[in-house]
Image 1: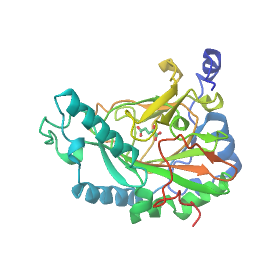
Image 2: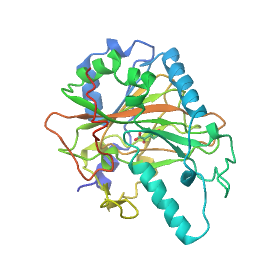
Image 3: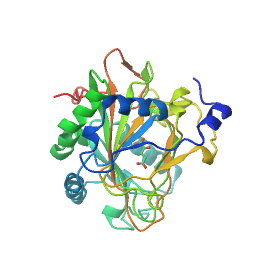
Image 4: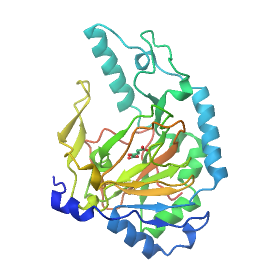
Length: 318
Ligand code: AKG
């Protein structure tokens, strides 16, 4: 597995993010070839004005309802003190994560529960993300994921048989929404050949430096994958392990990518990206999902996320 050399990274340093469109509707007017070229060059592409404020609002309203009804298993709310109990908790949390691929599940920020499992902050302010199958189970999120706009975009990028592999609603809570450390999505969503996974990340609120916008290393999608998260044999702890490691990368290689509410950011499966902790008093909510071009692609059986009989990866074009 290859990763970028310092000289390759150095070449990328001064590239600026490319932004297409600044008004709602601008994206549709953009020539597909231009989109594709920019995306190929940088490994990411900002499409401002992809969704309207009303479309963003509808998703946020729906998430409010889902959170109001959420059921949080005890092992995700309790901090145990003995080593045995801690192991049980860790195993329970691992199972909760590993079996979340075809469900709607809730994942929390650190330190939001007391020892008894009570919320120390209001529940709706404690969630880090909801994953990993909103696109399959909720009509609003299914509607956005399979919308004519998204399908048209996928077609314009030349995708023949895209399938939806996962979705996440990311909260980036005010004041303590955690950082997302530098990574490549293909570390978790590995395919052969590489280059078949595409993230679509939609800003439901303005995402700026202060509330933890995305940062990218332009061009870093050309260097292969530096580590992979693989599933351990069933029943073993901790459930997953890493092959390889994430190299230390100079912060100056990253380009901040602030966007307005409604922007869609296309993320190549191998581009290195991150987001900082949100220290501001504004949240930075986003809905993101990943597509795989299924034509001629093998989804790694070692990935933590696997299609299930209940939820095979649904085709995007329906
Ligand atoms: C991803 O979806 O791969 C991300 O890294 C998202 C990070 C974020 O929303 O802060």
